[in-house]
Structures are given as structure tokens and as C-alpha cells.
Length: 441
Picture 1 (cartoon, helix red, strand yellow):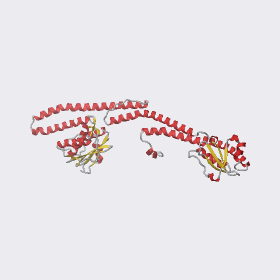
Picture 2 (cartoon, helix red, strand yellow):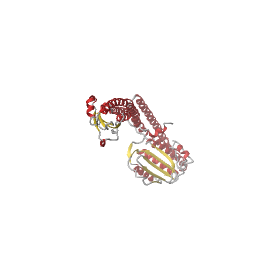
Picture 3 (spheres, one colour):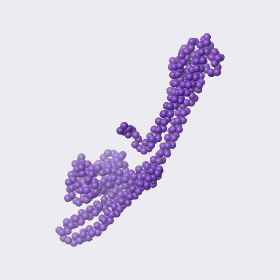
Picture 4 (tube, rainbow, N blue to C red):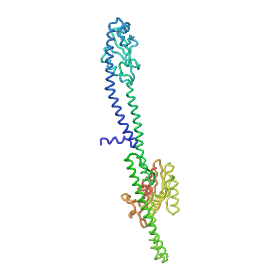
């Protein structure tokens, strides 16, 4: 619960999370090393070297105190303290600066300034703008003087090299690790694409690769896909065989009934027709959503043809004007989508007086909507309505044509095979059932 708020800021993709796992420890380690080195090592070395220079400056000031004037300080220092290699010069009041000067990245310079302020009596300014020289201005009995000496005597040379090396090699190692990790994650993405494609009814070639665990997961997926395909094939062959075997006795019954009087044969012929229709629906259900191949189709043109065929069949169906400005193509199984839309239109005109079809295509989704003015389906029974062989007698009038309850089940399978869903609701326009097939692009 304490870290639940972090989930909103965490990367959602596996590459982003892997990069975070790689970068976070490296960055934290570099920051810790930098802080520890700057505070313990670098600051300590600078303090020690500055303390040594302060002793030398104290010697220079002692000599300067013996000089009779400001102009005599420099020759006297060169005569007595030449091994210190410090240049001394008087500072005119007009040239005297009141503010220390250093670069923004000069960490050791801040340490030096603080030490001079605390330990050197008469300290005024410290000029560190030149990378190789230090200019110290301090007060004496003869006025302010400038003491110049080599920067290497007071701080470590090239202290930034450690930071440069740390960040450079840290970046290179992170880049190498990320490339290696990307190669390890690539089989996971391939497995995800194969599983997603199989869920949409497409068979994408896939071979296990990567680490041992990934190969085991890939092999398990292949076994599962093979078993599911075998099961679907067996179900299709079984129902197709049963439907084919039953057609022969139905044909003999139809021939036998044709020899009887119309009054006696009429009801029986109606029963035979109902049985024939049930067999056709069983066969369509057995075929499922795997009929046809995926192809790029314009959904507006496809639905226009579907509505035109329904109108030719005498159904009271209307195609509404295009919604939005979406255009383009989407990968669909043409035969399967036409069957799904035809099932929805058939249900709409069977249990209502008219149907309306609309298409909405956006950048992310395709929505096919069929509405009717019939009695609709109660909300608590909509999940039951999409189950195979489910009949909702209170919501549907069974006297208007026989049904085995497979229309919505077939439509649901087709929508799922395209990576979408079938949503049932109440039509705001007509007041009956609203059926939406929503497919992600």
C-alpha cells in the first residue's frame, strides 16, 4: 500500500521497466560514489593542501611585516623565500576587489575560500578564475598585497577526471547491458505477438528462443496452440459429419412427404424445414470464425454491401450515414464479418419491425452497430444471450421463425477472433436492442 502511488509513474512496457532496473542502481551508485569522494576524499585532500599553503602564506606575511613599504615586500620575499615560488605584488585601492571569484563547478575552490576566511587573518579575496593560478589578496601593515601561486599546490590536479570516467564507463556499461537485455526480451515480445495473433484467429510462425525458461514457455504455448487447433478441427469435422449424415434422411423424408396431400404434409414439411435450418446453423457454428483469410478491407464499403444484400432479401434494414471522419482499411475476415452482421440484422428484423446499421471507424477502433425496435434483452440476461444454444423466450418471440440460439454466439466468436467484443445494450434511437461489434485496429 505504501508504494501503490508509485505504480502511476512506473513504465508500463517491459523495455521501460528493464531500462529502469538497469539505470536506477547505476545512477544511485554513481551519485553515492560522487558524494562520498567529494566529501571525504576530495574535500579532505583539498583541506590538507590548503593548510600547507596557509603555512607558507604565513611565512610570506611575516616577511612582509618586516618590509619598510609595500614596494619593498616583493624583493624581500624573493630574497628570503624564493623556494616557495610565490609572486607577491602590492594592490592599488582602485584594483581591490571585494568579492571572491571562481567558476560555478569549482567545488575545491569553495573549500579553499572557506579555509582562508577561517584561518587567515586579514584575508580579503581569492581569485580562482584562472585554471592554473591562484591569486590571494590579504591585508598587511603596508596595505593589501596579492600573493600568486600555482593552483596544483592547493588542490588535486584534474579532479573531474574521476567523475568523467565514472559517468562515461557507467553509460557505456548501461548501453551494453541494455542491448544484451533487449536481445533477451525479444523472444518474450515474439511470444506475445504469436499469442495475440492466435487469439485473433491468425497463425503466426513461432519458434522458441532465448533463455531456458523462455524456451519452456514458448514450447508450452506451441503445445497449447496445437491442442486447441486439433480440438477445433475435431469439433468442426464432427458437426460437419453429423450435419451431412442427417441431410440424407431429411431428403428422403421430404420426398416421401411430397407424395402426400398438402393438408397432411404441410406441418410435417415445416418441421423438416426447421430441422434443415437447425443443421445449417449447427454447421455455421462449427465453422466458427476461422472461415476465410484476413485481408485489408474498407468497413464502410463492406457494410454497404451487407446492407444491400439484406435489403434484396426483403429485410427492412437501413444503413445510417457515416459517423465521424474516420477512413481507411482494417484487417478482417470478410466472410466471418459478413456472417456476424447478417446474424445481427436477422435477429433485429425477426424480433422487431426494422433495423438500422451504422459504422464508426477511428484511429484505434472499429465499431459496427445494429439497432432494432424490438423488445430488447434485459440487462441481467445479456450474458446468457451470447451463450450457445441459449433461448430467451420472454425477450424473443419464438413464433417468428425457429432458432437454436446460435446467432449471437457465432457473432461473439467472430468478434473475439478479431480481437474485439460484442456488446449488447439499449438503443437510444429505436428503443430496442443495440448490438455493437467493437474491434481494435
